[in-house]
Amino acid sequence: MDGEAQPIALLDGKEDRYGGVEVNLMEVEPMTAEDFNAKLDVSLKAWKDQGKKGIWIKLPCELLSLVDIAIKKGFTYHHAENEYVMLTSWISDLPSTIPANASHRIGIGALVLNKNREVLVVQEIDGVFKGTGLWKLPTGVIQEGEGIWAGAVREVKEETGIETRFVEVLACGESHQSFLERKTDIYFLCELEPSTFEIKKQDSEILDAKWMPIEEYVKQPFIQNRENFRYMANICLKRSQEEYLGFSTVLTKNLTGKESYLYCNTDHADFLNGKLDHASTSLFRKCFCLT
Amino acid sequence: MDGEAQPIALLDGKEDRYGGVEVNLMEVEPMTAEDFNAKLDVSLKAWKDQGKKGIWIKLPCELLSLVDIAIKKGFTYHHAENEYVMLTSWISDLPSTIPANASHRIGIGALVLNKNREVLVVQEIDGVFKGTGLWKLPTGVIQEGEGIWAGAVREVKEETGIETRFVEVLACGESHQSFLERKTDIYFLCELEPSTFEIKKQDSEILDAKWMPIEEYVKQPFIQNRENFRYMANICLKRSQEEYLGFSTVLTKNLTGKESYLYCNTDHADFLNGKLDHASTSLFRKCFCLT
Image (cartoon, rainbow over all chains, first blue to last red; front, side, top):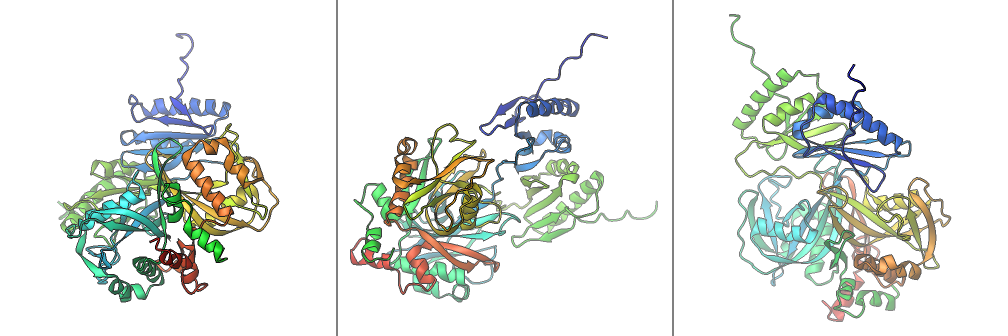
């Protein structure tokens, strides 16, 4: 009978722009399961009373024992990275607007042509093309936080030692359920211009690399027998004949003020970049009544 | 002294194409922590002896108690979805080639023009533009397994009730660290052609929606004062004047035989789709020595 019980403190949460609360337990004092259990109960009640909607809890791997408690109160995994898990719960009666987890991986294929219209090609040690004999364009995956053009330049350098600069995105495509059960690859076919020509292949992933006449590359049976490969190779061939126009980059800033690149019709990019007075392509289409 | 102890069975794993092993515990008999601990020890030893590289373990939420055991043996979270977690461990001396987790979310912005050169615009109830008075293009996020063009058509229908067909990707851009700490949004600006014109706005997310003259849309101070918005709006304006050419779709199949779309220069897409004998744009550029 020491008088009234101390009120239980709420979990320390930050309000977000969408009427939600973000609780970050990455750098707080260790918390017992009982303590977390009691705090989460009073917090959820308070947040409901305040009309809050989406609740987020970020937990380090050391606090895994708390995950179970939250899941029993209606939380689910939203996503996880090496060192943490993110749980969410939608506590409003309105339809949930919890944003989706990352759903895509971005891949690149790099068309690198030298002055003799030879294309830089590789054979990989492992993977889906192993044993097919296919000479393929260098390909790779864009890393977290990396730009498309920068990732393309990095992959070519890593796999073949060739230094390049980005020229254009020539095409892009989708491949659903290709690398993880529910995720989609979007690949960007990029043209890069080489500034070095001596190949130093990467030993861990690349079996062989060489310069190959573009016509020979396109004619490979593996490519000719698969419509999507044939289409992509046709775009590469037309590009090598200067008969194809893609998207090039305009440097700008995104909403948060960070530098970012816009990819758009090359004529228009030249116009936005101040290199052309107007976009030639579109004028041509207009003159010839193609639009 | 009952004779020899029974050998401990390995975890049931499937070999992958990259010298790895995938263990799926989603639908197995419940396993005690001691059982899992012992099996994982002998399995890891056997896999190492066999020269295996990447080990994957998929666990349902009901087996969360096993996560800790695996983490103490060198596993880390690879990713998680609502009902499972995926752990990985690289047990080879070679450099790790464990594929990255999904790193991107794909957004779309939809340019929908009617015959009077009015553009379909909305104001959102919540989010970053709340209170700015900005009339913006309908935007949204592509769902897991959904194609870019299909997601654009769906979002416009959901937000405004307008039925459309996909015409072209006009541009794309990147926004790093915008929705989740480490992830990147790639947004595709798409033109869609409306087949209905009466707006029925979505009540949960959309404050208001209307048709607005394109010049009025472009002139909004919020757009004019932000370079990336101004660039995008300029592309929309040029498009409305038939002075811009983007990427349109070619239906094909991906490596696993599923239908998928390739996005490439519209002239070339017409050529691949059998609608044009050759790509006019590129010929024009060649004639006028612009390449």
